[in-house]
Image (cartoon, rainbow, N blue to C red):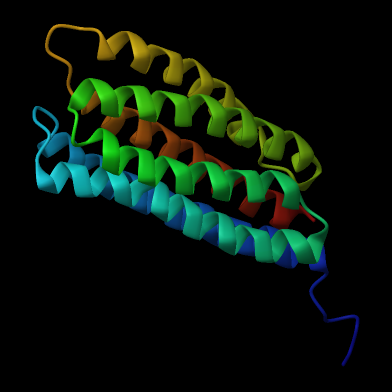
Length: 187
């Protein structure tokens, strides 16, 4: 193999991460639109959507783990993310039987903890470029999680805030994907 033409592992990792971030944006946008359409009540369709979101996060973290192992990335934090998202899927399935306030509380705990993990992963990958959006997203997620608890206590809570939260998170993934592409072209 001609090593002059080989793609360096860091570049391969950023290309893989960029594709994953684009997929996460597309999924978040579609998911948010579907949840927003059913946000006023907790139906079997909205409950299914709620459980699918953290399961998709698990799948993305597993894909991310593969590239992180090859590039020396944040493997430990990604394993934590897999565990948190798996527990959240189970928690949301149970919470959906109790109503929207319970769902908002479970989602709030997930947003806080996953936001902290995302913040740590973004900081550990900052040399790759394009990670400031992931760092900001992690911080915002932590704050949003706390606000879901407040919304759970309202007289007529809705799931619409979760749709907005997911869409905004998707936008942050899109920004990071675009920045990674720019950093790769500059390298």
